[in-house]
Image (cartoon, rainbow, N blue to C red):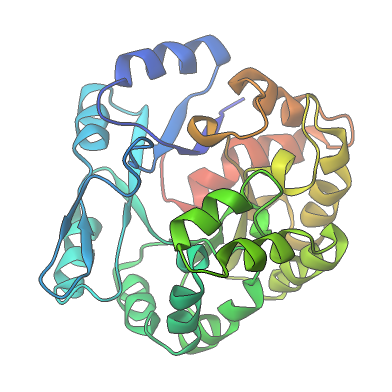
Length: 295
């Protein structure tokens, strides 16, 4: 089976160790989101207007050093005054497969998303033919604006589309840093899973939207291999989107529930409720197609 992990973090260094792990697990390739975990958001430059412009030195080196094993995405800031140039450079780079934005990390960014600050980015991404990974922390209904305005855009919903789980909300609250952040994000995390996931399933009505199946253990209180409590939600996602619009990601570098990389993989590969065709799509085929990444 051709297995692609559609989100790992890497940097600085560590590509050789990651290749060894990929080989041991039988994973053909991994999509890197270069995000240095000890220094959140880095590597990036702070621009004069306060926006950030990310760089991907480790991912770029890994992609050139290990041909076929790595590609990467580029995080973009919609406030970057050179956003058209940044996206053109991403389009033309040999190993860039997608863009990523995370307006779900703060309420201010979510308000900007609702207010149209991200619209130009979606238009530029659509023109460039680049998919956009979008992290909205349980607010997938907000994608309707971009989907309707840019019918040719390809959007991938990050992290199962769910609000931050019980182990994630304190991190989000700390990053937001407002006096009421702890109370707000605790309340967001307490929404019943069925209610929150129903909004995600509604996004299946938009054919240009796919779902990244990552952080399911923490999102659905399904910690511990084989993450049994997450299975009904995966079944519902495949039934709604189709297996050709669901892609697996371990996000092993930021897994809060403690499963190993192998356990996250085999929770899907060994799931008896999926057909072999569904497993092949979720574990690799969908990512290859949506990211235009030949095997």
